[in-house]
Amino acid sequence: SGQLLLGTYENGLVQADSAGNVQGVITTAKGLNSNNVKYIFEDKQANIWLGLEEGISVMDVRYPITWVNAAVFNGAGGYSATVANNFLYFSLANGIYKAPLGTNQSFTYRADAIEKIAGGLSWRVATIDNQLLAGTDDGSFTIQNNGLKAIDKSTGYWIFKEAGNQTVVAGNYNGIALLKKTSTGYEKLWDWNALQVSARYVEVDTVENLVWISHPYRGVYQISLTTKKVEQFTQQNGLPSNLNNHVFTINNEIVVATVNGVYSFDKNKRVFTEAPAYKGLFSKKTIRFLQNDANGNIWFVEEKRVGFANVAKKTVVYFNELQRRILSGFEHILVLNNEQILIGAEQGFFLIHAKEYATRPKVQKVLFTQVSATNLTDSVLYAGVGETGSGGKQVLHRKWNSFHFEYSAPYSSQLLNITYSCRLKGYQENWSEWSTKTEKYYTNLPAGKYEFQVKALNNLNEQSAVSSYY
Image 1 (spheres, rainbow, N blue to C red):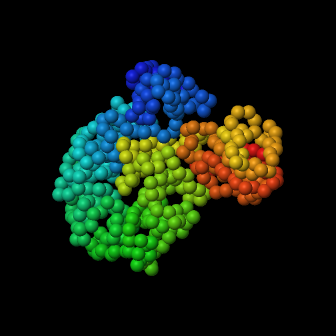
Image 2: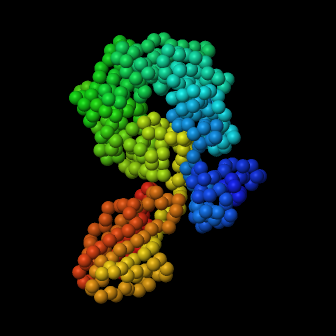
Image 3: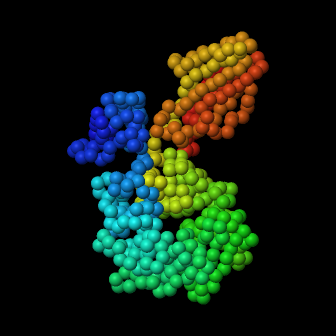
């Protein structure tokens, strides 16, 4: 691709563009066995193999997930991000940062292009009506001229939601506040903190003039912006549990992500029921975050896994590479331009290049790495060299009636996304459930003719051809 990779004696692998400008440095801190890189080799799938002073490492520099973890972040967790004035703004546990965007709001990660504009614990950056808002542990602010201008410093602020008529509902540590746009920024009109409920998840129904708040163990609240009337909804009102409900707006509808799928509100019966549009996609799943894009996909977090669902096709894809690496409990996903998805991480953010991800090399045919027969001792029938299956049949005495098969699909960048299904033809008719296990045992088989078959599946629901040993 024209990129340069430079092996160093003490500083790992240096990535540079064709002009020699350094784009990044990969060291032991990012997974190398050693910072002394002696040899570099690129294989047919664009994996980079590194011969090191201590061992071998393999990486894919063109892999369509980028870890946005600039040194200026200092390893802080990524809470949220937003776009304003052709810049991408980040809020992290230690401050607010910004980076320039390219055409079509595309983001090219360059660590040296990210600058810090404010310090301190920052929960949220949001763009509403061309105004850039920040919610921090110290209060609510507008971001102006690379600095913060205070709106309300009486409490910490979690979130901002547009409410119409140039107003914003802002969730804070004690409830909600209504902010009004002015010629110089925003000002606070009033507070609602009668129940002393921390409002970290807030959505506004501008048609009905209602605010929805979810609480980690009290269910969901509905507040009228007109009358200030409050109504609480719990398990008695149809929610599957009082715990872990998270309110979102998806496709212009207020929904609640729950421990048992996605629920919507029946305003005539005044109860929650499982949302019909998402049955079969999220049923029985603990959903913690939802965000839709312009193509009809819904990006979500299920427990500690990131995925997206195609509502029309009723399909779900998981990004297993990110499992347990996102910021659990403070999940955030920003759809930049339908081809780039930014996700809050335990350190910084992850950037998914969706189009490139979908066109990755397909899952390859499964290879056998070892086949053994067992009686009183083990006998290796195949050790990974030469042909199997079509290369000829193995004929054994019936006393060798137990077998151990080991196998793998040889595509290193996708290892976390590959599952396998197998069967022993002549003994089993049905294929096994998909599993990450790469071995299978059979014991005390009766005399007969058998064919062991195995196939692989990636997280895009693409299957390999069937591999056989008989």
